[in-house]
Image (cartoon, rainbow, N blue to C red; front, side):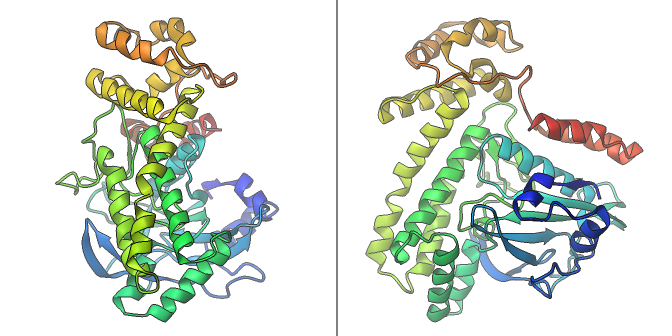
Length: 418
């Protein structure tokens, strides 16, 4: 066992498991009491880089268990790297240890930044050697268990629409309303709730400097929860064209395009819901996306800077001004948020920071003038150093694990996100 989230385990009544029992359930997948007797691999379709693929499904994972959290939410324990399923498509169904480490780090950091994300519940090294084209091989193997609010993807609906199963679409909507959006009284309200959740999530990504990398419709959760972290990146500096996946040659899923792509993906979900709801109702709901995104972006941005929001149009103008200045000046992204958290009164601290050289000149003066109208929101806490998770940092954490089985740097990084 390399990692277990005891806080998450406590929320679902599993914190008293011994290490041996933990490995029995989350490494060998012996069923939990009163739960699924057999794992459930799920089938779905999806647009992958906006090309439809009907040959998808849980190829290296499955739904292992479901439970009710302290707050009443239905939660899933799903796996990654647990072996082949009927949908593995010639893959070995395994996960590299490095891949598992990357997901643990991503979920902890995103949670630290206030992003709606699945949680890495468990990471167990299996002792197997894997061959991979994109990693030095043979490489170490692991199995990850993630705790999430739903396993249902946009692509789950797409498969039923592709098969012309309107009755099953209605059943799936009812299931989702009951368990995930109980306040939604009908399909239109259900869709509107998904739009709000999705807009909030992508706004959170933009403020976190997170590049998802593979925003295919089968990677979009109906609860808006981020999950399944493959070739993600966090911005070192702001570049709208920054991509995470080496195979994204056209920059379709670049950082700056993420809000647009989420809207496109929601449009594909609307096509599925059109089997049971009028087009004009779904189109009207989609038109709300831009406003939900704008308000969520403002709220997340101001929250991270620790300043009090004002009138929405003025605030959004300031957000845009800030993003343009950050991209023009190429200020280190994590340090910027650290330097200015709490408002303009942080100017002296910022001037002394490693970023101090950026905080001068006419462009900075214009930005600072716009910034100065905003008051601090409470008393933001300050850390000595900015939290970050850049690509090179992950490599530096992996090297001692790979060479000497030394996990101390990895554990210290996780502690920094508490």
